[in-house]
Image (cartoon, rainbow, N blue to C red; front, side, top):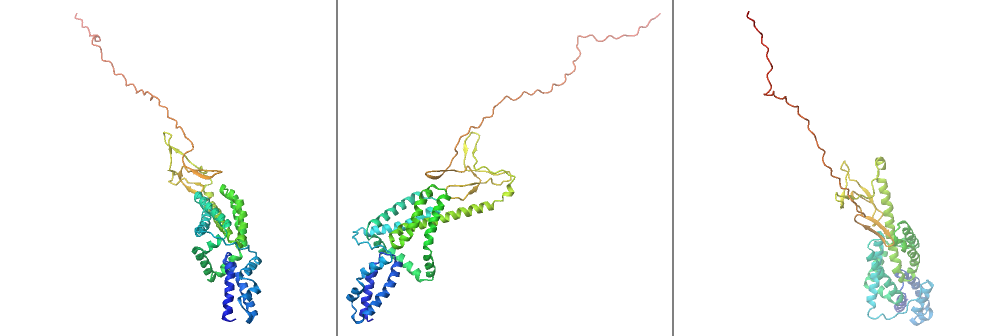
Length: 375
């Protein structure tokens, strides 16, 4: 082909690529690889009779040919371009960052065992608004793709595909159907194994969306706003389940049960009161050898027990609204007052009586003298 032919062929292909710009970049590349070879073959067949009009007469306009290839590949028709007004860029940027925040919040919420509910709820609301805008406003997904932030992400992916990691990425791409099924199973299993009300409520609908959104996101990029957060949520749940199982197994294996077989188990909680019946908090208990009296305690954060000798431990309450830890003492006591009694009277030994002195009025004993007779 001469220079003029090359130029016209390139223009034809550029217009085709523009007509397919709403599809994922990877799919556009695959379509254009096949279509480009065919367009070049047709141009060479035309030879000296080649012109832009002759090429269009043979294949149709670039937009029409792109529509045929799109339909043959199973992609939906392109949305009709519509004027988005001055706020189009702002809406596109809102949708982009709603996707980024949704992926991060979904992963953090699942990996933490359901913490940060308020932040996660706010991000989820923003994500739902973004999904409604994308499905209700024609051409908005194309504007999101034209943002500098989205272009940077595409360039990073393209650079990774050209690096040494290309083989790994290609292999991971072949595992996508298996990942869609695996994440659905993880969400369903976590809903029943963890026993957390939030997960139980979300398990069934998220399982269905996990199976549905993956394949659709390959054909319609608007489904990425559903598929990517669900994938991040499933990954966080997997880490939570792994941590709970591994930690529980390690804790059971690390406690030498036989050593303490003769010692009764410690109670789950201990409440200490002073002599006036006032509850004491933040008390640390030790035995006669100075060893801490520890007992495992499971809080709301995860299935990992916390063993220490600080009492009393918070109460864990679970209901339809979730799990919460309640500090304090759930009851009051009355310490019995010891009864006071009079001390017993002690009687000392009686000293022996001293001999009485002789009375001055008593006559002295009579003395009998000898009588001498003089004859």
